[in-house]
Amino acid sequence: MIDNPKSGRVKKTAALARKKERQEYGRFLVEGPQAVRELLAFQPGLAEIVFATTGTESWQHEIDQLASEGDVEVERVTGPVLAAMTETVTPQGVVAVARTWQTSLAEAFADARLVVIMHEVRDPGNAGAVLRAADAAGADAVVFAGESIDPFHPKVVRSTTGSLFHLPVVVAPDLAEVVAAARAAGLTTLAADVRGTDLLAARTEGVLAGPVAWVFGNEARGLTETERGLTDRSLKLPIYGQAESLNLATAASVLIYETAFTQRG
Image 1 (cartoon, rainbow, N blue to C red):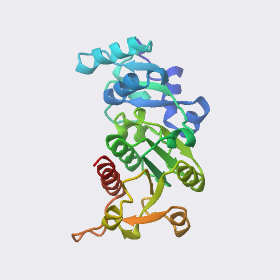
Image 2 (cartoon, helix red, strand yellow; image 1 turned 30 degrees about the vertical axis):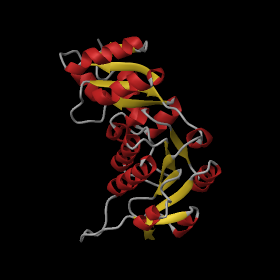
Image 3 (cartoon, rainbow, N blue to C red; image 1 turned 90 degrees about the vertical axis):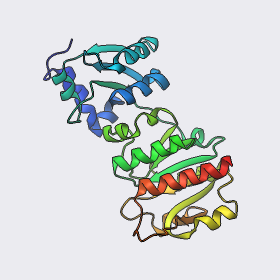
Image 4 (cartoon, rainbow, N blue to C red; image 1 turned 120 degrees about the vertical axis):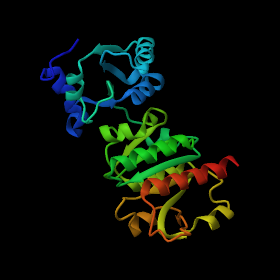
């Protein structure tokens, strides 16, 4: 039982909330029973250790069993220790340390029919929500391009509720390289932009029926003219009411699912 919140081990674990330490050690935090459960169920080889409080919560037996099956160590800690390890105001009783990983663009686009590319997306909640929608819609991969937020940021990991461990994730600094790789793999690249042509017209033309890679831009400025010019086509989601716009996560979810519906129809 670890009971000292100020111990070196606790401080080293808590430090993984910072990008510098995540990059230096190649490790990141996975907080909460849902995310830890998905880690152990889908990517047990990435899990290094699980820290959990002692209690009667329903998730504890399942996580202990999954950890045992994956040969992952479980260390018991006190509530104050767990709170010192995480950023959340009310920790949910369990946190894991996992190894970061990297998927190549070639691997991500191989035989893919639906890929989601986020370029310069900075908000962790948005990034996590888009990744989660991509997972739910059956996308083949998600790419974090340019200066997008780190996919291993604790808030991104939490907001994906485990979807981070269900599909390939790529970090690529150059959007042009990403789009070129998508084209080389036979995907049509589509920029989501309010200055694009109408989505419904593109759907009628069959644009969404084939392999597609969607590019979503920064929450505040979207995509620049140069960035849009890298793609095959820009499309906009029509707004029928009086709303000025939709936020990134909502618009992306609709476009991802519209593509999935068309492809599977």
